[in-house]
Image (cartoon, rainbow, N blue to C red; front, side, top):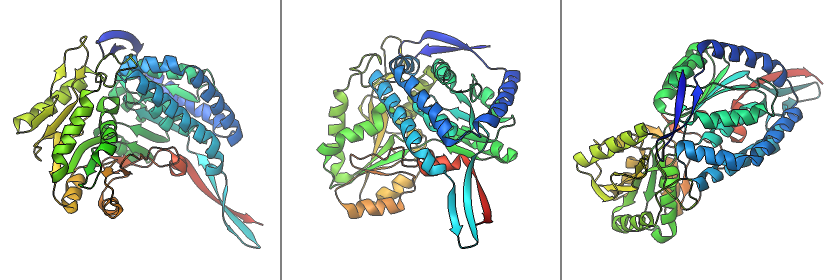
Length: 455
């Protein structure tokens, strides 16, 4: 069976990829286990050598890869290029820091004995990742595993299979055979993969799928790192300088056409700042260009699929039927038969709306008001998710209070951002478990063995 890939800017066919059969998955797992016997026992320096070669190969082909990602999932080309540069930065950080992170660590020493921890790779890791960042998700979940010594079998979302194949062609041209393998298909293909004899699951995607994979991992008694959905609040206090933060407010929501896991999904504004924030955010939006994602001037591209567009339309329609008001946008746009939706601000939000309770993956932001800091925190925490959070204030006392009480894994103040390879990425509640990146994330991909011996 073949799976078709469409360009979301015009819904024209881009290409087809053959879905991976159950038998082929079994063969890939077998081959990955065999490859691990060599790859997993290379020295750190030997693996760094290979990953450095891979870095250079990707760097030499990044423009072609960025164009493919833009064509296949609609990310504006300037953002696709930026995402690849960011991914390369992460690879370089792994190269420069992995040795220090997973080198043997002495935990005890006296005149008679030495105790130390040895960090060893786990084995064959099933990596299943979403469509919204085909490259950086590959870096975070696959390259991190490879550099610590695991072999990887990856499944990208069926929305970006051509990008997945392109990345596989690059990686397989550099790394030893079967160290990195790929399978193609929908969610059922992913289920077939995790049913095999794997040693770990690393996942980026929806909370619903994350729950399934967590149950599967528990049945197999293997570890899982799950980076799931988010509904990050942005809290704007009355002392915030709106002019200085409004561009960050826009970017935190509307980058990648609002299709970001830890993107700012809800704006919670102190009452006396509400009118100013709505007006100035609307002004910023009006100056943005919606159109062909291959045009470097484009700010807002199409949603990844017709299905994603319909889901967003349903969420907005539900909100309007229950009393929400449209400040701007609020409908899809007819443009070249693509999956375009106008950047939208909604107000008069109530708790019974889908847009309040569900993750909103698109260029739509609901804005709510609050009177006191306690009310702001209560609204911000009133979600099953806890991935990111954004606070806008000039009062550090307020900031520190929210940091203490906000149930989320990452928080940024004003125009700052937490996304760096040295920082762990992950959330609270149903936003997942485990961490990506940093020394904490890389060590989660290893087994820790304690060894005690005579001095």
